Amino acid sequence: MATNVSLTTELGKFARSCVESGRYNNVSEVVRSGLRLLQENEERRARFGAMLDEARAEADRDGTHDIGAVAREMDDIIAASR
Image (cartoon, rainbow, N blue to C red):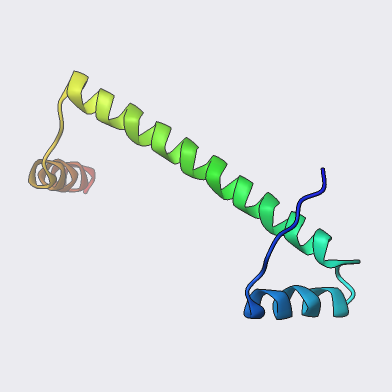
């Protein structure tokens, strides 16, 4: 699929420097690489959002713990192990 992309001056310079470094054959490869990274980032963000939704549902279903109660329980566990 052919698509034209307009880059800012700064991004254009960066893309050309990536090509000049020899890591990429052309600017299209640089753009594709950047888009793959963006895709991976968006997938991670979606998975994180799903984890948050799951945690909220669990909290709604099972309740929550305040930090003070957790700290006291940890102190009790530590004291019991001594």
